[in-house]
Length: 310
Image (tube, rainbow, N blue to C red; front, side, top):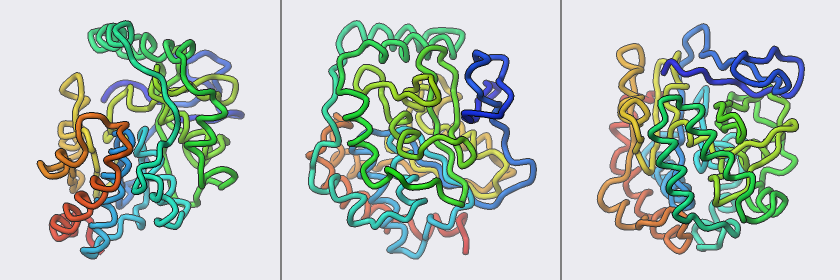
Protein backbone atom coordinates (compact mmCIF):
# COMPACT_ATOMS: atom_id res chain seq x y z
CA UNK A 1 0.00 0.00 0.00
CA UNK A 2 1.18 3.51 -0.71
CA UNK A 3 -0.65 4.91 2.31
CA UNK A 4 1.56 6.27 5.04
CA UNK A 5 1.67 4.45 8.35
CA UNK A 6 3.24 5.88 11.47
CA UNK A 7 5.11 4.17 14.23
CA UNK A 8 4.08 5.31 17.69
CA UNK A 9 6.57 6.99 19.96
CA UNK A 10 5.66 9.33 22.79
CA UNK A 11 8.83 11.37 22.91
CA UNK A 12 11.95 12.19 20.99
CA UNK A 13 10.76 11.35 17.48
CA UNK A 14 10.13 13.73 14.60
CA UNK A 15 6.45 14.09 13.78
CA UNK A 16 5.08 13.07 10.40
CA UNK A 17 3.64 15.86 8.25
CA UNK A 18 0.30 14.02 8.05
CA UNK A 19 -0.18 14.11 11.83
CA UNK A 20 -0.38 17.05 14.25
CA UNK A 21 3.09 18.04 15.43
CA UNK A 22 2.16 17.18 19.02
CA UNK A 23 1.64 13.54 18.06
CA UNK A 24 5.30 12.64 18.35
CA UNK A 25 4.78 10.01 15.65
CA UNK A 26 7.20 8.93 12.98
CA UNK A 27 6.70 7.14 9.69
CA UNK A 28 6.61 3.37 9.77
CA UNK A 29 9.26 1.90 7.47
CA UNK A 30 9.85 -1.79 6.76
CA UNK A 31 13.19 -3.36 7.73
CA UNK A 32 16.09 -2.13 5.63
CA UNK A 33 17.50 -5.63 5.47
CA UNK A 34 15.43 -8.72 4.88
CA UNK A 35 14.27 -10.45 8.05
CA UNK A 36 13.34 -14.10 8.08
CA UNK A 37 9.89 -14.81 9.54
CA UNK A 38 6.84 -12.62 10.14
CA UNK A 39 3.69 -13.89 11.84
CA UNK A 40 0.59 -11.75 11.22
CA UNK A 41 -2.56 -11.98 13.34
CA UNK A 42 -5.64 -10.17 12.05
CA UNK A 43 -8.70 -8.80 13.80
CA UNK A 44 -11.81 -10.84 14.46
CA UNK A 45 -13.46 -10.19 17.82
CA UNK A 46 -13.76 -12.73 20.61
CA UNK A 47 -14.39 -15.68 18.30
CA UNK A 48 -11.42 -14.50 16.25
CA UNK A 49 -9.21 -14.74 19.34
CA UNK A 50 -10.47 -18.27 19.98
CA UNK A 51 -9.95 -19.24 16.33
CA UNK A 52 -6.41 -17.86 16.18
CA UNK A 53 -5.50 -19.52 19.47
CA UNK A 54 -6.84 -22.84 18.20
CA UNK A 55 -4.93 -22.61 14.91
CA UNK A 56 -1.70 -21.77 16.77
CA UNK A 57 -2.02 -24.72 19.16
CA UNK A 58 -3.04 -27.03 16.31
CA UNK A 59 0.01 -26.00 14.30
CA UNK A 60 2.19 -26.70 17.31
CA UNK A 61 0.59 -30.11 17.68
CA UNK A 62 1.75 -30.71 14.10
CA UNK A 63 5.31 -29.53 14.75
CA UNK A 64 5.09 -25.85 13.69
CA UNK A 65 5.90 -23.39 16.47
CA UNK A 66 5.07 -19.79 15.50
CA UNK A 67 6.56 -18.37 18.69
CA UNK A 68 9.96 -18.25 16.99
CA UNK A 69 8.84 -15.56 14.50
CA UNK A 70 11.29 -12.68 14.13
CA UNK A 71 8.37 -10.25 13.93
CA UNK A 72 4.77 -10.51 15.11
CA UNK A 73 2.16 -8.09 13.77
CA UNK A 74 -1.15 -7.87 15.64
CA UNK A 75 -4.31 -6.01 14.68
CA UNK A 76 -7.30 -5.69 17.01
CA UNK A 77 -8.07 -9.17 18.40
CA UNK A 78 -4.83 -10.36 16.83
CA UNK A 79 -2.87 -7.85 18.90
CA UNK A 80 -4.03 -9.57 22.09
CA UNK A 81 -3.01 -13.00 20.84
CA UNK A 82 0.35 -11.71 19.57
CA UNK A 83 1.09 -9.90 22.83
CA UNK A 84 0.39 -12.97 24.96
CA UNK A 85 2.51 -15.13 22.66
CA UNK A 86 5.38 -12.67 22.85
CA UNK A 87 5.39 -12.24 26.63
CA UNK A 88 5.07 -15.99 27.15
CA UNK A 89 1.75 -16.05 29.01
CA UNK A 90 0.79 -19.55 30.07
CA UNK A 91 -1.68 -20.71 27.43
CA UNK A 92 -4.05 -22.19 29.99
CA UNK A 93 -4.41 -18.75 31.57
CA UNK A 94 -4.29 -16.73 28.37
CA UNK A 95 -7.21 -18.49 26.72
CA UNK A 96 -9.16 -19.73 29.75
CA UNK A 97 -11.81 -17.00 29.52
CA UNK A 98 -12.28 -17.65 25.81
CA UNK A 99 -12.77 -21.37 26.41
CA UNK A 100 -15.08 -20.75 29.36
CA UNK A 101 -17.23 -18.29 27.41
CA UNK A 102 -16.66 -15.51 29.96
CA UNK A 103 -17.33 -11.98 28.62
CA UNK A 104 -14.19 -9.96 27.97
CA UNK A 105 -15.99 -6.69 28.79
CA UNK A 106 -19.33 -4.97 28.54
CA UNK A 107 -19.79 -3.21 25.24
CA UNK A 108 -21.87 -0.65 23.41
CA UNK A 109 -24.39 -1.31 20.68
CA UNK A 110 -24.12 -0.26 17.06
CA UNK A 111 -27.21 1.37 15.54
CA UNK A 112 -28.28 2.83 12.17
CA UNK A 113 -26.19 6.02 12.63
CA UNK A 114 -23.10 3.87 13.20
CA UNK A 115 -23.83 1.83 10.09
CA UNK A 116 -24.19 5.06 8.08
CA UNK A 117 -20.81 6.29 9.34
CA UNK A 118 -19.13 3.03 8.40
CA UNK A 119 -20.65 3.23 4.92
CA UNK A 120 -19.48 6.83 4.44
CA UNK A 121 -16.00 5.84 5.58
CA UNK A 122 -15.81 2.98 3.11
CA UNK A 123 -16.92 5.22 0.23
CA UNK A 124 -14.49 8.03 1.06
CA UNK A 125 -11.76 8.59 -1.50
CA UNK A 126 -9.43 9.80 1.25
CA UNK A 127 -9.07 6.71 3.42
CA UNK A 128 -7.61 8.59 6.38
CA UNK A 129 -10.55 11.01 6.48
CA UNK A 130 -12.93 8.10 6.04
CA UNK A 131 -11.45 6.36 9.06
CA UNK A 132 -11.75 9.58 11.05
CA UNK A 133 -15.52 9.66 10.40
CA UNK A 134 -15.86 6.32 12.16
CA UNK A 135 -13.12 6.79 14.73
CA UNK A 136 -14.44 10.11 16.07
CA UNK A 137 -17.74 8.43 16.93
CA UNK A 138 -15.84 6.44 19.56
CA UNK A 139 -15.16 9.62 21.49
CA UNK A 140 -18.84 10.12 22.37
CA UNK A 141 -20.17 6.55 22.19
CA UNK A 142 -21.90 4.99 25.20
CA UNK A 143 -19.58 2.15 26.13
CA UNK A 144 -17.84 0.87 29.22
CA UNK A 145 -15.35 3.29 30.73
CA UNK A 146 -11.76 3.33 29.54
CA UNK A 147 -10.65 2.04 32.95
CA UNK A 148 -13.03 -0.94 32.73
CA UNK A 149 -11.86 -1.68 29.21
CA UNK A 150 -8.20 -1.56 30.23
CA UNK A 151 -8.89 -3.87 33.17
CA UNK A 152 -10.62 -6.37 30.90
CA UNK A 153 -8.32 -6.35 27.90
CA UNK A 154 -5.10 -5.92 29.87
CA UNK A 155 -5.57 -9.03 32.02
CA UNK A 156 -2.22 -10.79 32.07
CA UNK A 157 -0.46 -7.89 30.34
CA UNK A 158 -0.59 -5.10 32.94
CA UNK A 159 2.90 -4.17 34.03
CA UNK A 160 4.53 -6.53 31.53
CA UNK A 161 7.39 -4.95 29.57
CA UNK A 162 7.43 -5.13 25.81
CA UNK A 163 9.14 -8.33 24.69
CA UNK A 164 12.70 -8.26 23.40
CA UNK A 165 11.61 -9.79 20.10
CA UNK A 166 9.81 -7.52 17.68
CA UNK A 167 6.09 -6.91 18.17
CA UNK A 168 4.02 -4.47 16.09
CA UNK A 169 0.54 -3.43 17.23
CA UNK A 170 -1.68 -1.36 14.95
CA UNK A 171 -4.14 1.38 15.93
CA UNK A 172 -5.84 4.47 14.46
CA UNK A 173 -5.89 8.02 15.83
CA UNK A 174 -9.52 8.68 16.76
CA UNK A 175 -9.47 12.32 15.67
CA UNK A 176 -7.34 12.32 12.53
CA UNK A 177 -7.84 8.77 11.23
CA UNK A 178 -4.06 8.38 10.97
CA UNK A 179 -2.83 4.78 11.14
CA UNK A 180 -0.12 4.08 13.68
CA UNK A 181 2.02 1.16 14.74
CA UNK A 182 3.10 0.81 18.36
CA UNK A 183 6.30 -1.18 18.71
CA UNK A 184 8.99 -2.16 21.19
CA UNK A 185 10.50 1.34 21.08
CA UNK A 186 7.26 3.32 21.37
CA UNK A 187 7.34 4.00 25.10
CA UNK A 188 3.65 2.99 25.32
CA UNK A 189 2.53 0.48 27.99
CA UNK A 190 1.89 -2.86 26.32
CA UNK A 191 -1.58 -3.35 27.79
CA UNK A 192 -2.63 0.14 26.65
CA UNK A 193 -1.37 -0.48 23.10
CA UNK A 194 -3.38 -3.72 22.91
CA UNK A 195 -6.51 -2.07 24.37
CA UNK A 196 -6.26 0.70 21.77
CA UNK A 197 -5.85 -1.78 18.91
CA UNK A 198 -8.93 -3.71 20.07
CA UNK A 199 -11.17 -0.65 20.63
CA UNK A 200 -13.87 -1.09 17.97
CA UNK A 201 -15.47 2.38 17.58
CA UNK A 202 -18.94 2.58 19.07
CA UNK A 203 -18.49 -0.77 20.82
CA UNK A 204 -15.49 -0.18 23.08
CA UNK A 205 -14.01 3.11 24.34
CA UNK A 206 -11.11 4.90 22.67
CA UNK A 207 -7.85 4.56 24.60
CA UNK A 208 -5.58 7.45 25.56
CA UNK A 209 -1.92 7.15 24.59
CA UNK A 210 0.47 10.07 24.98
CA UNK A 211 -2.33 12.63 25.21
CA UNK A 212 -4.23 11.38 22.14
CA UNK A 213 -6.96 8.76 21.77
CA UNK A 214 -6.76 5.66 19.61
CA UNK A 215 -9.12 3.00 18.29
CA UNK A 216 -9.15 -0.29 16.40
CA UNK A 217 -6.20 -0.88 14.06
CA UNK A 218 -8.56 -2.88 11.85
CA UNK A 219 -10.00 0.38 10.50
CA UNK A 220 -7.01 0.52 8.15
CA UNK A 221 -7.32 -3.11 7.12
CA UNK A 222 -8.41 -6.22 8.97
CA UNK A 223 -4.92 -7.77 8.86
CA UNK A 224 -2.36 -5.13 7.79
CA UNK A 225 -0.31 -7.88 6.15
CA UNK A 226 1.56 -5.32 4.05
CA UNK A 227 3.50 -4.36 7.20
CA UNK A 228 5.33 -7.69 6.82
CA UNK A 229 7.14 -6.35 3.76
CA UNK A 230 10.87 -7.08 4.04
CA UNK A 231 10.49 -10.58 5.50
CA UNK A 232 11.43 -13.74 3.62
CA UNK A 233 8.63 -15.87 5.06
CA UNK A 234 5.19 -14.65 6.12
CA UNK A 235 2.42 -16.60 7.84
CA UNK A 236 -0.90 -14.80 8.39
CA UNK A 237 -4.06 -15.79 10.26
CA UNK A 238 -7.30 -13.98 9.41
CA UNK A 239 -10.55 -15.15 11.00
CA UNK A 240 -12.55 -12.75 8.80
CA UNK A 241 -10.50 -12.31 5.59
CA UNK A 242 -12.48 -9.40 4.17
CA UNK A 243 -11.89 -5.84 3.03
CA UNK A 244 -14.05 -3.07 1.64
CA UNK A 245 -11.52 -2.50 -1.14
CA UNK A 246 -9.58 -5.06 -3.08
CA UNK A 247 -6.16 -3.97 -1.87
CA UNK A 248 -7.30 -4.20 1.76
CA UNK A 249 -8.25 -7.87 1.52
CA UNK A 250 -5.77 -10.22 3.23
CA UNK A 251 -5.50 -12.52 0.19
CA UNK A 252 -4.51 -9.55 -1.97
CA UNK A 253 -2.12 -8.08 0.59
CA UNK A 254 -0.27 -11.36 1.01
CA UNK A 255 0.09 -11.78 -2.75
CA UNK A 256 1.84 -8.43 -3.00
CA UNK A 257 4.68 -9.86 -0.87
CA UNK A 258 5.44 -12.47 -3.51
CA UNK A 259 7.78 -13.51 -5.08
CA UNK A 260 10.24 -11.94 -2.63
CA UNK A 261 8.59 -13.76 0.27
CA UNK A 262 7.15 -17.22 0.75
CA UNK A 263 3.73 -16.66 2.25
CA UNK A 264 0.71 -18.55 3.55
CA UNK A 265 -2.69 -17.19 4.59
CA UNK A 266 -4.85 -19.26 6.94
CA UNK A 267 -8.58 -18.46 6.89
CA UNK A 268 -11.54 -20.33 8.41
CA UNK A 269 -12.91 -23.32 6.57
CA UNK A 270 -16.59 -24.33 6.59
CA UNK A 271 -16.29 -26.15 9.92
CA UNK A 272 -14.65 -23.14 11.54
CA UNK A 273 -17.29 -20.75 10.24
CA UNK A 274 -20.08 -22.93 11.60
CA UNK A 275 -18.43 -22.96 15.03
CA UNK A 276 -17.75 -19.20 15.00
CA UNK A 277 -21.28 -18.16 14.10
CA UNK A 278 -22.36 -14.75 12.85
CA UNK A 279 -21.49 -12.61 15.89
CA UNK A 280 -17.74 -12.17 16.50
CA UNK A 281 -18.46 -10.97 20.06
CA UNK A 282 -20.43 -14.09 21.04
CA UNK A 283 -18.24 -15.50 23.81
CA UNK A 284 -20.45 -18.57 24.12
CA UNK A 285 -18.86 -19.86 20.93
CA UNK A 286 -15.31 -19.54 22.22
CA UNK A 287 -14.75 -23.13 23.36
CA UNK A 288 -16.25 -24.73 20.25
CA UNK A 289 -14.36 -22.36 17.95
CA UNK A 290 -11.08 -23.10 19.71
CA UNK A 291 -11.43 -26.87 19.35
CA UNK A 292 -12.53 -26.73 15.72
CA UNK A 293 -9.67 -24.39 14.84
CA UNK A 294 -7.18 -26.61 16.66
CA UNK A 295 -8.18 -29.51 14.45
CA UNK A 296 -7.83 -27.20 11.42
CA UNK A 297 -4.32 -26.25 12.52
CA UNK A 298 -3.35 -29.89 12.86
CA UNK A 299 -4.61 -30.63 9.34
CA UNK A 300 -2.61 -27.87 7.67
CA UNK A 301 0.58 -28.09 9.76
CA UNK A 302 2.47 -29.99 7.07
CA UNK A 303 1.65 -27.32 4.48
CA UNK A 304 2.57 -24.44 6.76
CA UNK A 305 5.85 -26.21 7.59
CA UNK A 306 6.84 -25.94 3.93
CA UNK A 307 7.03 -22.16 4.16
CA UNK A 308 7.82 -21.70 7.85
CA UNK A 309 10.69 -24.18 7.92
CA UNK A 310 12.92 -24.97 10.86
